Length: 545
Ligand code: ADP
Image (tube, rainbow, N blue to C red; front, side, top):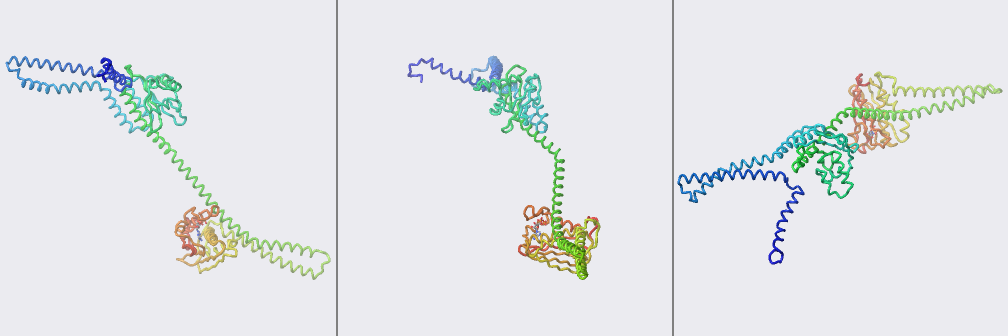
């Protein structure tokens, strides 16, 4: 480039100097090296090297003089080289030691920072309160770096505000009470740039609004550096660092230490918050479990109640049907009676007619009495069926109880379902008959549901082990193995919503068990279903209540 051009050579030389000058400027501007420290340590190196070199020269001269005195042919190059070699060997450890000393002296800050980081990471492993962590960070920052003060501001997730959590050193009131919204430009800048920021970092910010807003924060807090505490993509808080007591600016090392501390604290703070939440959850857990259990118990009670209401509904339908006939004809008879009495009282009725009317009235009264007898019997049956007034064990004939129940489900049978009774010679059983009737009612209702209006129900009783065995069989569609394994589970139902509660069989199972008996089922798809119940001659009193 230089040769063969008319370009004056010293201009080219200028370019030669411009390059290191530009690099030097870049280093200074972008703070690539810590110039202050590099300069200091270079000066120290220079001084040390000078001292060692002086000593070396002195020794060489001294040796030379010594050799001259003993008249050795010192001019021989072999001896000189050997001597020099020994001298270098001798000086090398000294040089290494000196270098270490100088390095150690200028690197002492870095050593202190390393120790601080190690200590703080060890301590944070066991810290579980945000307050403790924040205090520890503040101590590390102020003590290790020799700054005026440090403050930790944390983001409050609830009202989305960054506010001081703790501080150390001198902060004025304005700084101590400062709060910033999470959408403040500075928070956004810290979140976006993900590095510590000083006031000077906004000199080149193009948007004057952002620049001023961010500078304001530095002025309010009177902080030199703001270090973001980031966890994943979230900004948890900020460490605000004041000026160094020595008056120097915070260097690269210090910034790095602050970043490391912020990272450590973010993990520790998140852990502590999670721990806090778990602790709070634990505190309320017991109460919540109790609440849920109560709710479940209430729901269960409601469902059991609705199952009872369903049985009651069936029962009422049966009773109404049974009562309707006798009451119907008693009512019609009363009307006839009315007419006959009027005829009887009418003047001019001859004796023969009176006699006929009297006979007719007598017949009507007899038949009406039969009707009311029937009504009385049904009401009596109903009371016996439910036996709500009898909490004591009673001796009953299970076949009679089955008959009583069958009377009540009469309207469900209609014309399509035939009931075949096959009662054996069974011994009486001491039981709570009302409860057992609820079981029989349930099984018969399920059979009617399965038959859908057409089929046969066989009801059998047989003596078994001193007690009684009851079988209720239908020739309905039966059940799959899967359904069969679950029918006694509470709330298991294959019926439509509103038609089944899934409680009938589980309640029945409970009643039979409390009577000291057992209940099981035999069923296959398309082969019908048979429910079997075995009852001991006497129920264990206390358990059947
Ligand atoms: P729900 O009748 O309210 O469904 P249950 O506990 O009485 O509750 O019955 C549970 C389930 O058992 C029924 O949904 C039905 O699938 C089955 N089941 C009971 N009895 C019979 C039967 N005789 N034939 C076929 N399936 C039956």
